[in-house]
Length: 453
Image (cartoon, rainbow, N blue to C red; front, side):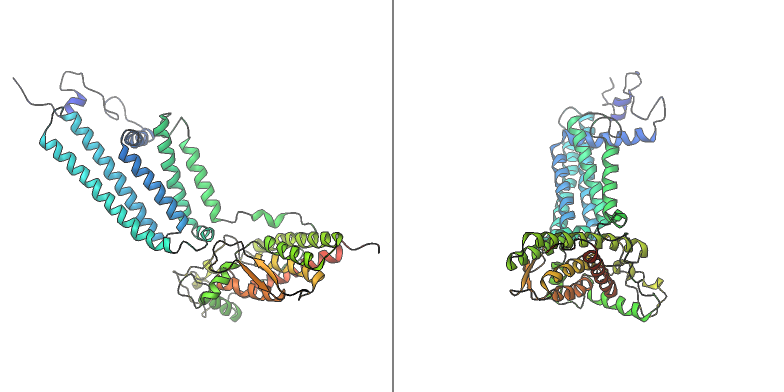
């Protein structure tokens, strides 16, 4: 009698009796590429559905990716995290495959079978310990710096945002399909894997670009056209002015190793606040302080906000008219400007970045428009002493509320702050304030004029 136990392949395919199971991809026809992916993803879903540890690993991976997104890890740190996550998931799947193969091969206790399972489980343990160590090394320093502006950090890492968003969506789609058991991994059922991944990709890519390019073509409230006050062009790349402003922001505006002081870093972050909130707050303070009547208050707020809106429209029209490169783009590629006084730095990164063109400074356009109208009603030095501005930036590194004696003070500081942030060249800030003043003066001269006594 032949007592040899049939092999796993013999048991699956049959031992000559013709009663075996037809394996996917063997026998009658060649499977398509889509079917190959389906089989692979079905394997992931099966492990996720039937193995508690795999569900824990998926949950941990999701938490790690969200933390990486929120804390703004570097490119290298993200690569290490992704490799560690993949290492753990692969080890767990291999372990599950070995367990399944052994269970098929033997139905009774076998010391060698137990040893094989133990070794496979040990591989998962090593991968998990490594992942914990990597996570600690990456996140321990990041958590200590968690007081930084999280919104800015997200905006400063568009490429990483894309990768992390796609990874999170893939994990959630696979997990949901494992729980619902509907459809195949790549077609049918809810949620749609194709739609989810495509939407995640679209949302992530739009974060790399200007989310408001349409603003430059909006019909303005006061000025005749969205390009009425076209700014002077940026300095020529071969000029001494370009080299001077380039090197100024290169030294002061870099994220690390800059010549900025701590106070300058705080001020740069403090100004990452929406001007429409800040200057309407100031207007309300001064209206209350001076007992401005209802009619004049309404005229002030209407002129201030319409001038600010039109300054933004004209500014965004300028941005796409000139389409000039920002420091974060120009400094690593300085070799392309044909100016011997500018030297490229491939590792240079700005303290704060923005996804739309440089020329002119949008913040300066808005602030100048608002303060020009406020000066018409209260002068440069408002009656009653200093006024307060509240920054809506998240944890700028100091007090959110600061006081100023005149409107000239914040405008002067803002020009420097955008350089310290690495966002703009000096002349782009100056041109922005010129545009904002022109819009406000035109609006006040042509609309909402007092009538009667």
